[in-house]
Image (tube, rainbow, N blue to C red):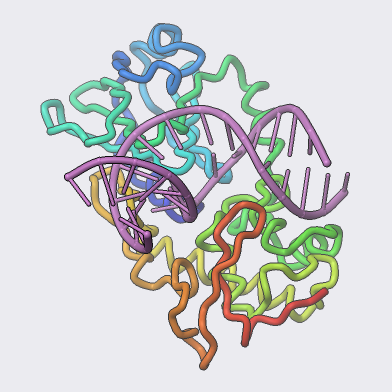
Amino acid sequence: MPELPEVETIRRDLDKELRGLTFKSVETTTPKMVRPTPAEFEKALKGQKFLAVARRAKLLIFELEHNKFVVHLRLTGRLLLCKIGDPPDEFQRVVFKLSGRELRFADLRKFGYAKLLKSDDELEKLLAQFGPEPFDDLTKEKFKEILAKSGRRVKDVLMDQEKISGLGNIYANDALWLAKIHPQSKSSKITPKQAGDLYQAIVEILEKSIKLRGASDRPGYRDIYGQKGSYQDHFLTYQKTGKPCPRGDGIIERRNVNGRGTFFCPKCQVLVK
DNA sequence: CAATCAACCTGGGTGC
DNA sequence: TGCACCCAGGTTGATT
């Protein structure tokens, strides 16, 4: 579900809402989602105030007075800020009880997790594995360099979090269409002009989706208030198999690339080998 | 180093 | 209606 725009939307709202609230306890039907264990998680954080919520790639970082924890939503995670007594989400797995509020972690597929960090050192190690951020240190020059260095398919590079932070399947597909580049093009063979266009496309599309508060597809991303985003009404190629290309007379094709559904227009997206 | 596949889980949609 | 099969926003690890 959540790629950079969805996670960033959640981060902004939680950062505003959680500051000053106190962590009280954990209740869960799915203990493996709270690490190392729900009991240790609760023991460490009980009584601490939330100071801020940050983000790196698709990871949310919760900063409390003496400890930090991270949350990864993987494919179907939701974080919902609720009043005590609000009806539960159909896929609710974990409830973090706070002063006057509940932060609920719902996840149809149970791949997501919250993880208590033992030290700032552990956080640093965790963050060190991510590549540059599109709205921070991913400059156009840096981006060109990254593409030039890889012999893999360009779509795989875009989605590799060690190379570039935050892009997932939806935005990688749509950005490649915007830049008129075939997803299976060899990264190192992309021309500087194409790389520049792709960089622009990525920034544009992520900005647009953040404005629209992300994309809510099937099981569905929700913001912390349980509301849908609306980028799904603006998908360019994603899940548009058989539909006309928004730009010309091509038909959007679906192909499996690296185990992921890959959508593109064979007419206007150039394959560079 | 790159590509492929399975695993982790659950549910929706489709086609027979 | 039932059932088999494919699909899904992500990431990791084994194998070829």
